[in-house]
Length: 341
Image 1 (cartoon, helix red, strand yellow):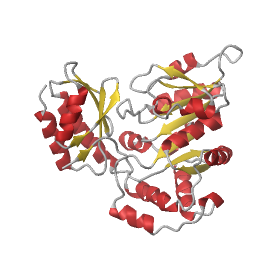
Image 2 (image 1 turned 90 degrees about the vertical axis):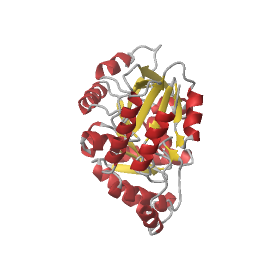
Image 3 (image 1 turned 30 degrees about the vertical axis):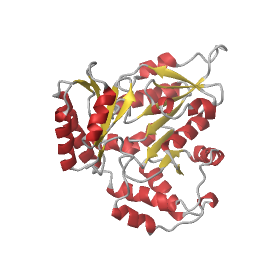
Image 4 (image 1 turned 120 degrees about the horizontal axis):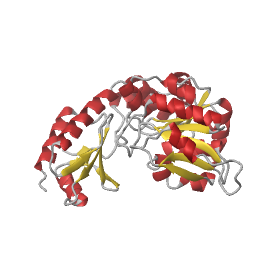
């Protein structure tokens, strides 16, 4: 038995999702002629009360296009030091948009409105980059799947409005946060200029993300998506997977969260584990004691049929998803107990 906890991106379409994909009505999306893509875009735009939406092949491309439409070369965005747009998108903010990142030393990938205010450059100081954009990530990947407090997000929105800044949400796992906190898509659509939604993580689609925002922003995003090579043809087959996921795989995310909490509790009881991040959703991040070589640990887990990864800085990660069963969780717990320091 191989239990893949590397990411929630490793899932394959369920038989029901695959059938729904194969039955999709498609057309050439480059010519705005794919009805299933339009259905997906309209579905998410209405869900979040945004004017328009645009389907992308990846979350990274959706985020990078959002940065591009909100900034000009030489400007600056504000984000957490652990933000995905800064750490895990290949330096795209600099390469694609020519912007720098002002990093906030937040808590588990989250920060406060006051910290944002402290990072905003004086627009009249010619020596400083103009601050144009604030980006947040919910849930926080490197922060262990943590969920932002909506009240704080509102406060940051007010800071952005007062300083004429745009506000982008990297919502790669936003539905995990919505299910856990019982907040609504409408709440998020109200305060953010743009939102990226990943369909291939906890929702279980094989590929795809959607960017939401104003109509004028999505018109610009469409042009930039083309420039980046993101225009696709009969992509309705993939969009159909996203529609199926939204209809059938959202509420079940709570099951992933419950399984992750079982693993976090078990890790907390093991003497070779130094610390475990608070576990709210489907990501479990933990640190080993200094005397344990993480590569030795990871290889031993692999021998026992359990796959996980290192995120650097001593952080190890396990992610639960729709292919992880209760029996698999029991196997992982047994494997963790087997390891000797």
